[in-house]
Structures are given as C-alpha cells and as structure tokens.
Image (cartoon, rainbow, N blue to C red):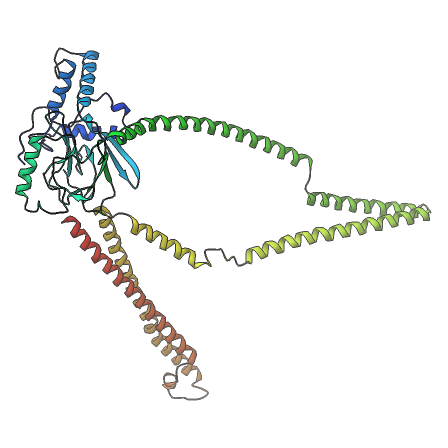
Length: 513
C-alpha cells in the first residue's frame, strides 16, 4: 500500500463535545492521543482514508465556519470547535469499540469521534496494549474519505497477525466493517491481494464488497470481535458494535459513572451513621461495665470476702467464749464455743472450695499448654504443602510475558546457586567428623595406655587394634546413609531447576524472535 505524506495537522487528537459522556477509561487515553498527534509518522492514513485535517474541515463546513479561524477567540472559538467536532462525528457511521478482558469491559471508545484509531503496543497508539505479541502498530480502524465514510479494519503488517471473528486478516488489506464501501479502498484491497501470494487461503478473511456488520436483512450482524496476536497468548478482545449493540454500550457507559457515584455517596453516609451509632453503643457498654464492676464483685471475690468474714467471726466468738468462761457463765461460754466451731467449719469448707477451684484452673491451664492440637500447622504438614501447591498453581496460571520470564530466570539462577552452596557445605560438614575422629581416638588410646602402664604392660598399639564399638559403627553408617540421601535430594532439585531454567531461556528466545 502506498503511504503518502501526512497532511499538515494530521494526528490523533480530537475536540469532541461528547467526550464527557464517554467512559472514564477513554479519557485516560487522551495523553497517548496527544502524543500520537505530535508524531505524524507513526501512522499515515491510506490514500482513500479520512485524515485529521479533513475530519476537522468537514465539521467546520457543516457548521458554516472555517477550521481553526484566526478571528475566533475565547468562548466563541471553543463553542465553534465543539459544534464542528459534533457535526463531524454526526457525519460518520456510529460504532463503539470495547476492550474486554475475561468478560469485563476495561475501556470503551466511540469510533465516530476520530477519523481513525490505531491499536498497538507503542505509547503513541490511540489504544495502547503493551504485550510481546502485539506490534507497535498492529491494527487500525479507518474511516473512508468519501461519503458515506465507510468503516474499515486494516492489519498494519503486524508480526503475529490479527483475527476477526476467527479469520486471519491479510496484511495491509482493508476489511470492510460497516457501510456501503469505498471504490478506492476496494481497488487498494485488490492490489494488496494480488501482491500477497497467500491471498487464496481459506482461513483468511475476504475483502468482498459486503460489509461485515449490518443491521438490515436476515444476515444482520451488529458485533465483531478482533484478537491481536496468536490466539491464546493475548487475553484482551476488541469488540466493535453498531446499531442496538452500540446504543446499549453507550448507555451503559453513561450510566456507570452516575450509578457508581450515587451508591458511593449513600454508602459513605450509611457507613458514617453506622460508625457513630457503633461508637455510641461501645461507649454506653463501657460505661455500664465500669458501673457494674464498681458495684458488683465477682463470685470468687465474694467467696474470698465471705471467708475473711467467717474467720473474723470465729475469732470474735472464741474471744466471747473466753470472756464468758472467765465470768463464770458456763452456758454462755458453751454457746459461744459452739458458734465458733460452726464458723470454723464453714470457713474450712469455703477454703477447700476456693483451693479446689484454683487447682482446677491451674490443671486446665497446664493441660491446655501441653495438649496436642491436631489443627496446629506445626504438626499438620499437609497444610503447608497445600498452600505451597496452591501458590505454585496460581503462579502457573499467570500469563507469561518477557518481564515475568526474565524474573523467573533470575529466581531460578539464584535458587540453583543456593542449592549448590548447600550441597558443598553438606559435603564439607560430613567430611569434617571423619577427619577429626582419627586424631581424637589416637590421643584417647595413648592416654589410656600411659595410665595403665604401671599395672600391666599391654602392647602400645593394642587400643588401635581393638574392634570398633557396635554403637559407634551403627551411628557412623546411619550418618553416612542420611548424608547420601540428602545429597541425592539436593542433586535432583538442582537438575530440576536447571531443566526449568533451560525451558524458560528457550521460551524467552522464541518470544524475542
């Protein structure tokens, strides 16, 4: 396709009066649109395509003014620009582009607001999709220059291709989406098909004069889905809607901010009211608890107070009995002694009850401290294994891109280094006791022979010739077996990590290619 030089003012910026009613996500792309307008070489419309300058001139002609007139200033200029943009948008066929991921609409754009839309991974794109399988300039949605300004989709010779409703788009060959079609675009498509050797492939989309989207007849189709890159590698769908589907998407985009703002305000008011009520209830409960704690004692405190009262009563009765006996009142002394004995018995029973309760509390605390909890993660090894398996599964389900693959390669290299260091340290630790055992045994044998020399004179090498103790031999063999098993596990882990590292490196090479 021949690429003429862009006319002056060609870019991706637009002044649209309906931009306030579009979704918030479309407004976030204004910065990328402005940057795209500053670089006219990023995308140049085809000869039959509508440019930014022609789009503005069409709007100005509809309202009876000139695009960017020098005489206009202030509010009048802004009003004129707004009216021109609205008139230009009204002259184009209406369509809505939605960016969908996992059934959720991320962004929504009204295609009639601009003469063309470019989707790519570059920040200069009107709709940026940063992904390794998406080219800098991947797909363009272009309106034609001549009325009634049909809508086309063009694959901008992307590396991994584009698909519309499951069919591959031919590079640089316009696909008619909506409208009667433009003769110049049809001729351009025929030339591109003649140059393409694989244009006869059945899996590719055809460039017939029949539009893909239509609202009339039995074959009415109001939506089409674009997939960028190889299917399965990208997780975003680009859906173009016309007719009732476009109206529904536009209405939903208008109602979403209002519907989200009203419940947010109501929820904030309700939350504030609930917070105040909860604070008042907590303050009242705290005041009631403080009042109760000041007036009423616990059962244990009441029993301790009763025990002190019984002891005091017993002492008073004993003093009374002694005073009655000294006065010669035998009957009074006997009655006082009987009452003192009853108070002593009640105090003993209450003391036993208090001691029993304290003992039971101590036993319960000790039992709880020493009990075996089956749900304790320290004893339940399956919980940690299940958590690790779940984390690994979530890690595997994440989409792979170049950054995540580089991070995985760096992590694997670090893990391999740590495992090799652990293997080396384990071998050194296993060799150290064997090396230290010989001199120590020799020194002990020498000390034993020196102490036993006066009593009996055994040969000097008798201790060295003695057989090794059975327990020492068993412990040495067990330690060697455990060390060998640990080294084997470490070696297997290192091999697995190296295999994963080679797979990630191969995948990174393929992705870069």
